[in-house]
Length: 315
Image 1 (cartoon, rainbow, N blue to C red):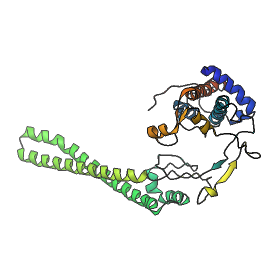
Image 2: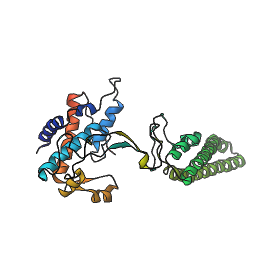
Image 3: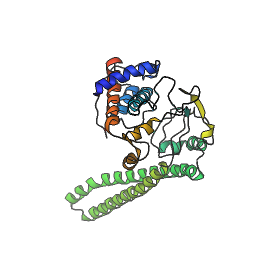
Image 4: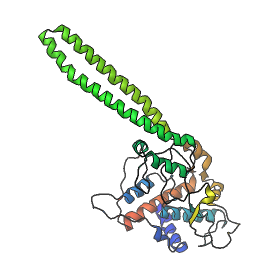
C-alpha cells in the first residue's frame, strides 16, 4: 500500500473509530508572521526522527494506535479489537520520573536547570530532589556543584587578569629592543612568561573542575513540574484520565507491541543494542506504516492547518 493511500485509509478509520480524535490536535500559537511558533518547531522536530516516542503528542498517539491495530487486525485474523470503546488501553497517569542525566529544561515555574541555578538557588534544586526521594549522595552533589562553580569563577578572573597583563607587556618588549635596553627586555620577558604560566595553570585547573562538575551535574534529574503529586512510589500516582477502560477488558486481545513482534515487524532487542532502551527497530510493512503515518501527520498539518514544512539539518 502506498503511503498516500495508507494515509487516506488511516484518516477515515480514525474518524470512524474515534469521533472526537480531532480534539487532541496540536494547535498553532499566535505570534508574529516572521517567527515560527514553539509548537510548530516541536511539531517538525518530532517528525525529523519518527522512531522517538510520540505518546505526548495526541495526534501521533491516536494515529499509531489506530494504524497498528488496523494492520495487526488483518494479519492476525481479527485477534486485535478495533471497535471504539473495545481497545485494550492502559490508564494514563501523572508520574514522577526516575532520576536520570539532566539537560537544561524549564519547569512549570520557568526555572531552567543548569550549573548556575544549582549554585545560586541550591535549596530550589534540593526541594525538587527531596520530592523525588533522592539519595544523600545526590543531595550532596548540589553543594559540591556550587563550590566548584565558585572556584571556576575565581579561576576565570585569575586567568583573564594574567592574559591582560601579558597583552599589556608584550608590545613594550619591541620598543625596548629598538631602544637597546637589553636588561629591561629580559625583565619584561620574564614577566610575560610568568603571566603565561599563570594563565595556563588557571586553565588547567578549570578543566579539572569542569570535568568534576559536569559528572556531578549529570546525576541530577530535571526539576519536577509543580503539578506533579508527591509520593513515595508509583502507588501514589494520581490518575489524570482514562480512555477505553469502561467495563471489563476483553482477555482475547493482544497488546500492539506483542502483535507487532509476532508479525516480525518490531525488534526491541536489536533497538536496545543500537540505541538503548525505549527505542524500536521496525521492519517490513510496519516500517512502511511508520513512514506513512509520518507523511500523514505532516500532510494534514501543512495542507489543513496552515503549517509550513521545513527540512533542517539533523545532528
